[in-house]
Image 1: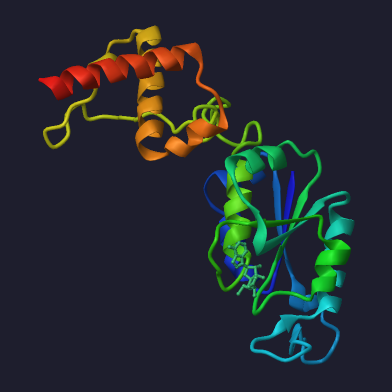
Image 2: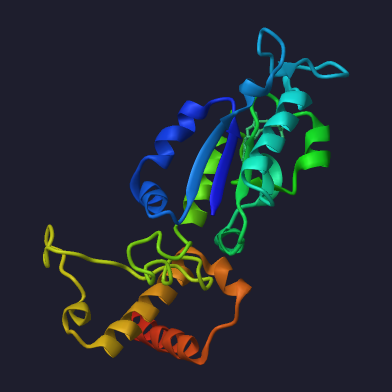
Length: 250
Ligand code: SAM
């Protein structure tokens, strides 16, 4: 999959493509990352990319002409790509959205705004989708684009070392991931749950299921509203309730 970022600050994005799993995915030819400087598409001698808002008010607005030329250039390089505008007014990004974008066969073009945002006609004419990474306002869309690319790229088969490693991630099935441990077996007086050292795969699976459910229950109970509990999950929660009852009455 091709990831193309349209930005006024390409230096922010370049190093992101050069590190970690993203650069490994690029090396393995599973993904491509490119950055396009919107300013290169400004035609006046000052390379102007912004102007004052019609109707007055503070701040500057990104002009439509360089943006249109930059998007069209990106579309030529990566045909049939989906054009995504980074904006706090967009649909809230989520793991579900990351999965949907990762299943796209074509590429993704991210338009990063700056200043007070961009001329509305660009959104009307060229943008397929508007995405926000949360209910707060940043100075530019670059961090948002990197957040989305990072979350999507790791779901593309082969980008992570093991094809299984994203399957138990938090939010994949509306649950948080179970607690994880590595060596040493004892750290600052704290041990590792014995079952994880037992080598009994079924017991480890059950322990992880329980840990995942307990964490979801304690940290993000709202996730339970998104999907129904399986019979195994109901049994685990009932058992936990019984254990808590014993603990409280002691
Ligand atoms: N005036 C705009 C508004 O109130 O909706 C905010 C503009 S913001 C200062 C500049 C740019 O940062 C936006 O065009 C967008 O690309 C990016 N941005 C800011 N917050 C964002 C968020 N939560 N999610 C995605 N992009 C964001």
